[in-house]
Image: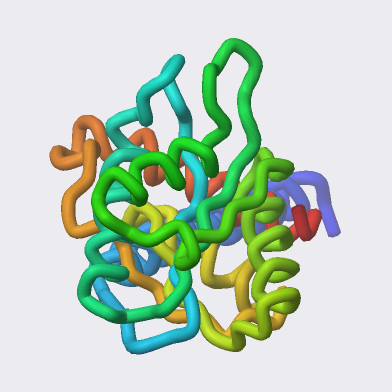
Length: 200
């Protein structure tokens, strides 16, 4: 192959690769968005509320939406137990799961219905610890609560861990407009790929 032909072949090959990557990213973005718009909640043994930031001694706006939705599902009788996940970050007064427990009890959820773990710091960690609690308490199915664009990755992790799970995204979110939602969606696309490649 002559140099001009080799150069043209390389350019065409690169163009094909770029096109495939662009199509894949567009498809993944649409898939994450669509998945997060569907509520699969059904009667289950427990509700798992994935952790999010605590600002000092109050839940972040994102976390507050998760807490409200998880507690609402409990009040509706969708599960007999609710699991809150997440450790305490440096500088915070409460762990994420402790904040969840405090919020749930303030909303009338009996203490006996609440389970917490205070070790995990990532989504995968949340689910690993939640799965351990499920096994300990003989809970076989779970409704997973998180933000809409977080649901696809969380559900992929849950199923890889052997959790029989149903997604229930928060019906409201801090990320209402595309201006605020797009950075979060792009972040989720990155971490979805990261999980596929590293398993973490």
